[in-house]
Picture 1 (cartoon, helix red, strand yellow):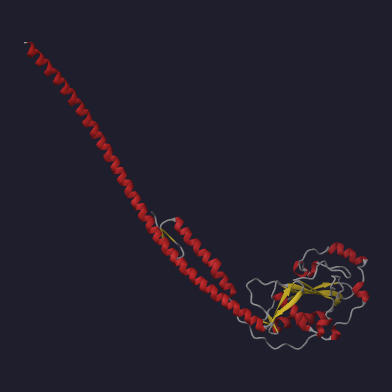
Picture 2 (cartoon, rainbow, N blue to C red):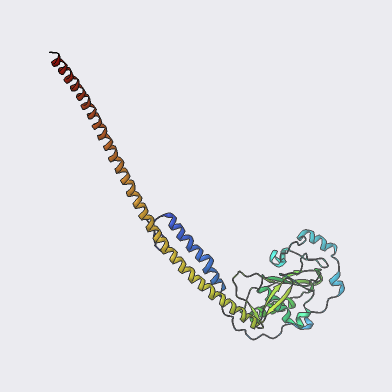
Length: 340
């Protein structure tokens, strides 16, 4: 039987079936055991830098008038709406779905989204001027979950009311977002962006977009806590809880490594047994070939013996005929002799 060699480990096998079993075992070990172990490992958290001084003040965001937040769209707005866009449907983020230059929102209308795991509505920025950590917790929960978008200028019922939009306020918002993700989060990130959807009368909807990260990713801490998104709420894990989680993960990794070691030993044992099985198979095939040769030899000898037997039978038949002829002649001579 021809030998085949594995391209990875250079081991020789007695056939293609044994080589395929060997490759399948290696693929199972790599995908089901080693890859989950590598995914469990996380880099250590970076030290948190000191927080920067506050950017916003209460004077930067005057309260909106009722006429600005509850007014219906004008005729010009309705015409622009028919030309530039349509209604929003589904659970996609507006900021991730269409560029701000090619999509418009309209004052007093529903935004077409609902608050959930990836969407948060806030009517104005006034509360976050006084309590900026609330918005940071929300952004941190998006980072540690599936990403999301905070819409500033949208009421809880989804009606667009807008916030006061000037070059000064939007620059301060972008600077606040940059300082938040670089100085308040550990480790720092640089993926949070601000998008603007302009309305009328100097109003706009600000969208703070947090893109989803590809797993496995390290958790991002804020004030030594990791926040997560649960439906439409923000929940936290304290540092002690995180330490306990890390300890459990370390134990799990240790158990997985021990299981992986046992799997390697079992794989080596299986390889040894497969090698012995291959040797036994080769011996069986060799014995089978020898038996076939013996059978063929016996058949050839048997055919020769049959031919000899047939030849001897023919000779015996001739001799018998000759003997009978001689007997008849002898009897005839005896009869003649007796008659004389």
